[in-house]
Image 1 (tube, rainbow, N blue to C red):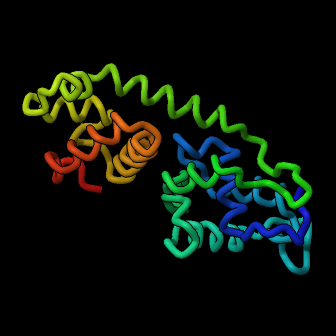
Image 2 (cartoon, one colour):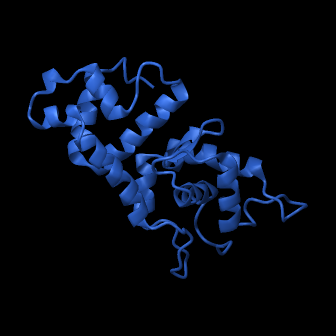
Amino acid sequence: MIDEDARLTNPQLVTVAVANLGGETETVDVEDIALEASRLAPERFCWRKYRDRVDLEAVRVALRDAKKECHGAMLIGNSHVGWMLSPQGIRWIASGAGVEPDGGTIARFRRGSIDASLSAEASRIRRTRAYVLHQAGRDGEISLDDVYELARLNEYFPPLARKRRLAILDNVAAEDEGIAELWILLQSIFRRELAR
């Protein structure tokens, strides 16, 4: 629980909540976020009259705000599919966000757990044919099937699941230069197939 005078805004608090719940590689449901945000700052996310109840609408507003560029675009998603950290959100969390004025931490997560999730996905990507061909300088041989293997997608994926997979790749690319280079290339070559 944090001091109400702490400088973290509601969008920052829900970003910390998403990070606490594994939102670097998985979508997190709005109700889970609401409970975690309420645990972090009960006075910010409660009803006025019944202070022991979580105000889901206050959490939804904070989540939508955290998605906006003016608040750092730290989250992606929506209340229907769930919420994830964006690359900017991961960088913000890694920068030491969630620190109280007295030096204590709000967040239960450790940077190591975020690194481990992204590292596991990066390791998987490095074993794909697309990555191996790119490293060998044979970009012209990368097929659509290779892209689908790298992205763990196919043409039948529902749009929301597709966006989630592409967001995970964005997060991994933000942390790994070699994968970022390949991901940018693939998005330019397979623009239509990787559309969100």
